Amino acid sequence: MLKKFFIAKATEGLTEGSIRTYRQAIANALTKIGKHVRNITSDDIRLLLASMRLNKKSAAYMNLVRRSLNSFFGWITKEELINKNPMLRIASIRETKKVRQPFTEEELERLRQSAGSARNKCIVEFLYSTGCRVSEMCGINRDDLNFTDSQVLVLGKGKKYRMVYFSARCKVLLQEYLGQRQDSESALFVSDYEGFRSKKEAPVGRLSMSGVEDMIRKIGKRAGIKDVHPHRFRRTAATLALKRGMRITDVQRMLGHSDIKTTTIYAITSDEEVKREHEKYII
Image (tube, rainbow, N blue to C red; front, side):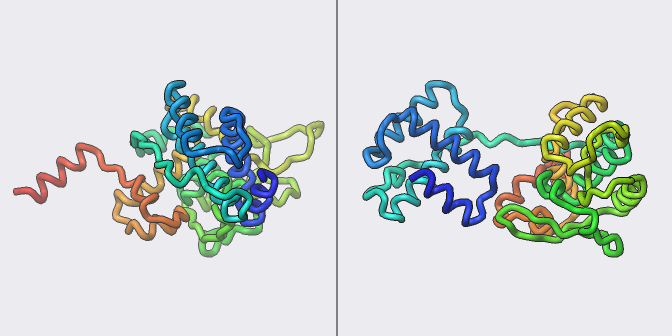
């Protein structure tokens, strides 16, 4: 049943990363329940979730397990591999919503100055100015760039393409970086950490997501900024765009969100901004 489920999900276009996450969550849950899927009841699911809470698992992780099981049992019920879906009465877990902070404009400038090589400066600026996911950026090829219109087509979640745009600053950095490249690799960003390689090393290859994450963490450490990761540049791009007056529907398109509710997460307003607006409007 599991094999059939994952084959179906792969055919539907679920990414390898999502399939890996689903597989691990479902396999762990079924192992802990210890029953054949045909014999699992709603009470078994509730006991599983209760044991996870007792073991101090986060509400976010519990919801991940619940969603994974919900997808699996929903599919095998629809395929008539079982008679009754035990997930129908299982409600979502209440999560405490954490406000995830973007970089301040000062922090963003410090990260730019701490980037180091031409490639790294380019990646920092590209992540910020386009609002791309790191997976989207790593999939871009050199030939995909349209320097005339400062735009590039990226493949996002759900195998959907969208156009993203880069700033004038990013355009200049891209041209400088690509002008230094002497390899024939098609990827926009390649795996030469400090921007150079010796002849004895292996040929350059496409930069991986983990490579970007590692490089960004090191830049954050040099800049003296905590919790530096690629997604925070995306959050910063969205937050600053909304703060400067960009329509939320345009930010939604920029980020590639299918649901505008996801975009509203980035509409962070500080207490000082609320105070200024209050003084302006409440007389």
